[in-house]
Picture 1 (cartoon, rainbow, N blue to C red):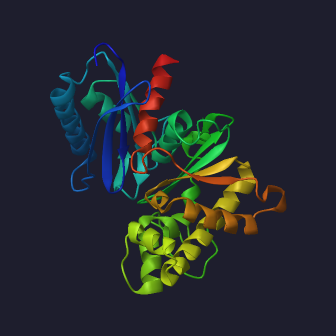
Picture 2 (picture 1 turned 90 degrees about the horizontal axis):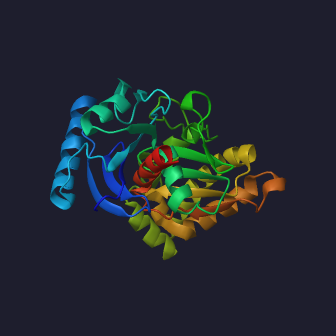
Length: 312
């Protein structure tokens, strides 16, 4: 590592938390994934993250937290507010009124930037991934929850008070009456989150399939799998149409666990989106898979955020 500057990227998800250390070229030097422990306080959990990070640094790079070569950390979490550095309420984490930026700066002994997790994933794709040649794109993360990150005219769009671009909470007309984790009804997240897709699979097959099995059977033209894919693709396309007519992006970039379904799924979604969208945009918005790791896109964005903040 010598005297090279590095930055942490951290992604606190509803199921797992990822930690990565990057150089300014986007090379992942260290990484670790651990369960997001909801049985302890946020303070205790961030302390545990700092301990795990120090362990990695000591073993692999022989440096300490607080070393001047560590420029800072960019951390993503659901509903994290860039301007205040706080999480007001994150149902998927069970956290309320958490001063997350302050906790990270205390425990990691460096500059910390806090951002919505989908925003960080969008920054990562814009800097090093599928969006690096696009001026206008919208990242859709389909994981424990559903998030959106908007890159408009080459810049991240946060909206007023950093609460814009919550596309996971667009209402989808549907007879199923699904309850979202936020308490709302028939939000996009209630259909396209991991829980929502699992529920759709159970409703249509009476079985429990993982995403990998669904993708394999779909590529083999299994009838049940095709029905499931068509169902979730139409629900996703309905949400994308509502977002697409507002912003007219060059592309939607699909990230998160569902991105493992790959281009065959994207093609079904695009076909359905073009059937539903206003004629002026038909065929003009691409759908591509995030090129950074489906599980690690946000940590790339976290590090990129720090390099942009410190080295600009």
